[in-house]
Image (spheres, rainbow, N blue to C red):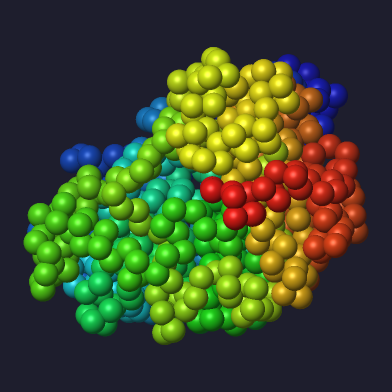
Length: 624
């Protein structure tokens, strides 16, 4: 076939064409792109004879797993040697015979020998040089496995290891039930992180640490984009094109990561917020180790989406995290508007935690915590009342596992709103935003509402006495009498307005603030999803999902991704997203200057975005 670069797909930047090649390489070839790749290398390795995961090792130099990583009976599985056949998430994300993303391909040979090594505080790690100018290091322990007596304790230092630790797969996620965004996991040995760095190794590059979303009950650093085999949080393009060192982490979730049992304080452990302490531990690991990868420990940006976005906000609020990071980015979620049990004190939720222990078969009273530490992971998860996003259901669980106010010496000495309003927060620039159609993803499996009476009944079930006010604020007539569209906007504005509330309070505290509205339809299903919750993640990483079905839409998506990569990395470098290559000037946000940049073709500036709706939700009447 003669080569030509006139096809629209050929006009994409090379790194975007590599992304497309991974999913639709045949289409790229049929387009006749002269330098398109047809040899995408799979990230997966072959299964062992017994189907178990195996650890990649240097020839004749075996990695010594951390002491204590072996599983005790009933105390959960370990991941000290989780490598091998399960794809980019280590959880069956890539079916056998299907190509993995080209962006994950590296140069390490079939013998599993690393081509780069780095000496860290606790031992040496091996890594892989990737196409396009980046290095990748997978599954580095930043804390000891939280097993046995360490369950629910603050994260401890990892044990030093001998030899060269070289991993070719991500750690499996922390324990969770299956969710529409992540596979199930029973793996308690999960406190690992991954690093991407520019190649050749830089000196003092900005660092960006990603905190994944998932409601603080699901997700992980190595999961795929839903319905695809493509790694969601791939730091390669950010490192190679953005010149930053990227770190992605796992942290404890649900009942194992947000357990505020009253015995914990007397036991010497944190009375809740274990997952937030894991994130802080990872930041301390960055402080102590990141220079070995060419990163600057004095220029660290934390960024996250959804629950990860709220967790970024909690890190900004927590006194103990100050100085460990220097910029913050919250994508779809703040922490200053209270929802449900979130933000209550550990004392307020104590009775629920005792009742949860009883559900595990552990009698209330002295010794309940010790009994709970012996409970199998499947029992812990099976009684967790984990939410099921996407079905639109209205739930009133007996207990929930969320961040709590845990006292003067705890992670949150007061509720986040009070800390923001008092100005007792990290003095860092803060970039925040949300997506235009946040709510669509939460109704994917919901029964359709077909009448006004049913719409009113749904609102009443959700919001009680203020339901008539919610109806007046979101009348179906504003949404072409599509009741599902109206409800989607109601649910989505919980995220839009909580993010806005945190931005207002940060700006009022004198912090430099920038806001955005992401408005690019998610290519997974643009008509159904619109610019849904989580649609912006791949764009922020510079790796948008480009299915190849609509070349013009792919071009637009790739252009917005390039712009976002520039904005995000410029913010990481200087605290200001503006840069010479930016397609538009990003205005600063202030309470009296309610402006945000729209991340979409044309990059318009939005003023007072959904101000009327957010005024309601931020008032005492609003019940998120």
